[in-house]
Length: 367
Ligand code: BMA
Image 1: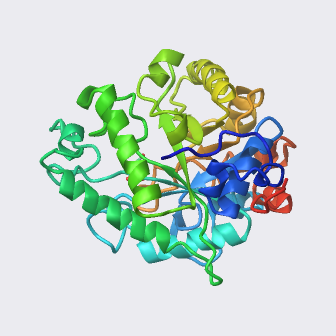
Image 2: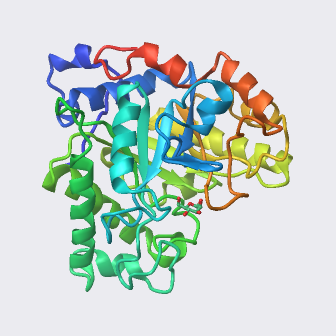
Image 3: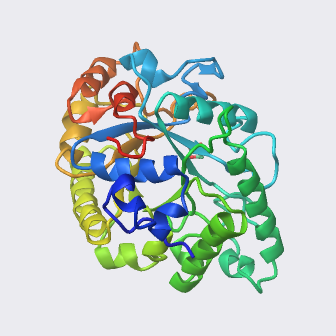
């Protein structure tokens, strides 16, 4: 299976034909996908990784978020990571307990926000980290591979966690799952140098089929996201097929050379938005940012001009680490870039949660 939503019709318009794709998703999840398609081209949603779990100098404080402390509003999109869920049910690789993660995910949903989850998975072959590239692991965890059972166990743990993401009334929270990201680079065990395109695609399909069919999860959309895009052919070389992907994206960070970042963004976005249009997928910048934001006008003068002409649904800034003082991507209130971030929030194209919530994106016929 894996056929998802090949239609641009609204849920209401197509439910009379009982489109197989929409029937496989909960109404809220189908509505989210439809809403993202409607939003792209009109607005760009602002996302932040681990937004309400911790930030610069604080952790697990109810209601707190660096995005909100600085701008007055929560982000529209929340990025989370379930790395270590596969080996330890207590806390993720950045020390966020899975109980807190669950609470923050449900809270975000109830406020009208969107949750996307990446997976810096342990290497199933040797128990090393996501960055352990010492083995040619992907082939070993596919069906018939020596370590397949370990991988199935990983997926079962993920499925159990995803199933636990429900509101009090039992509604499954829609999740955008983004596994095996930045796979066109070679720094994770699933990276380009460590598996063939065929094996990567087989792993992707096995994973999606397991979660959606075997485990019966109907609240998952799936995001495919590479690192910087060079060419359309390179981006699509490991693409698992339209039935296995809902969102297409890429990750790219600004380093010292802002002009080079703008050039890379424009090339990546041109290719990405063409692919999304051709295949009726939602395009998004799944990770970006400028560590420590050394340019106090970066948001309105570098990021905004780089993205504003492209119909992407969201742009997600990476995390404000608590135990790594130099590792943050959103300005805290006294940071030199705070004013500029507030100005970025006021741009009509950019939506934080205060702009998103009124769109009621989880209601079938909205926005
Ligand atoms: C990386 C860094 C790491 C972190 C990982 C997963 O980009 O932020 O510190 O452990 O993402 O969140």
